[in-house]
Length: 459
Image 1 (cartoon, rainbow, N blue to C red):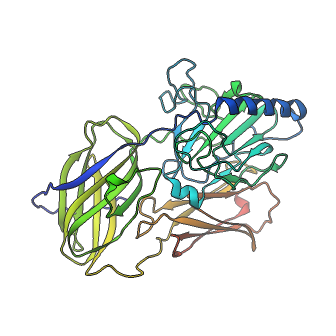
Image 2: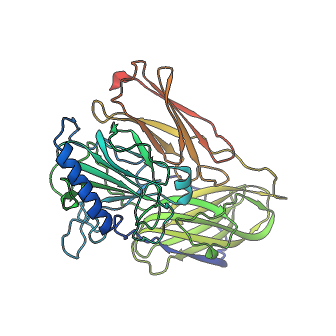
Image 3: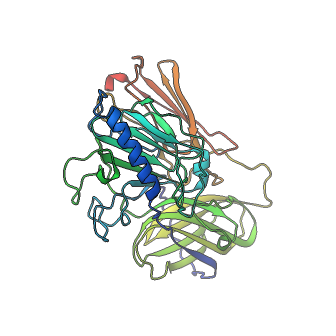
């Protein structure tokens, strides 16, 4: 989270608000896999298991990675877990209600369709055999219609199967019968089938039918050993997942998962300045404060303390503000948003005497870290850890090019919108170690690269 504190300047608070709005982002409660699809895939899996079940595939006992190329709680959000309550009530593995009635998988949400269109990878979380692939279906669904979804089904040996739903059309890389390694890319996240926005529905079966579906997480309401080698906690803290400045009238845009025009350049004079956020875990009865700071740090506008209304707890929400601000000085200004008294975002924007031509600036240089294998033979991953909110001075959506070298050999070269990438460590790589170069790109300009090195000796 980008948090920069600015010295307090006493002033008369202005309270003229052009517009303010937003609200909760609806949870996908479409069922993800229709009953018709479930019956069909159950038959497919039962037939496969009768022919090849209990084969000589040696599978890891646990998932070695999460099956998506992003950071949970930042660019990826686990919106729904498995509903463990067999009645009409709701209960997830951590004894809360982050699910919906009858949900049998885990939903990992993207921030919007722009990231889907750039691409966010889906990875195999452990070794397996591809049972079935379906591709070619419409992938920008927002209504949860009952229709086929692009998907992959894996068999991991014994009685274990896993399902991956809603792929982006045309991105699935595997076909039935393929052997896949843990950390191998299966395809990219989409919104095909019964879906209300881009997300991955990940479902685990301990048997050849959905009656054996289970949540691999372990917690107070799902006792026993975790199905993940390295289980991640439920993101529960308030956070801003996305921030962008814009001049538009936000009330004319539908909001997530759709994108809105961004703008980081303004002209000297009095006019509207606005921004929007995507947030997670907004507490009940929260308040906000917006300030616009001149280049010298003095406060040009202060909204005072405003409220989100008598808001309930919002697991996911989006909000926008649009104020008339006297931009009376050219230079580098700052927009600051505080929620419940804590500065959450400080965002730069430029004010000039005229709109600059060809003003696009490259993305900020990323801070990158290696995630070593969680156990021998597990995938090797790299993550973009900062900046995590404002990644581009023009507020463009940033994608990253990941170039993996084993010794001097390039073994993976991909560009996508996810903040995490990985390679299967079980393949017979050389012993010279790894070099990963990560370069940000905003669709028009490349930013500075960051390179990290990892030695196989650390395995």
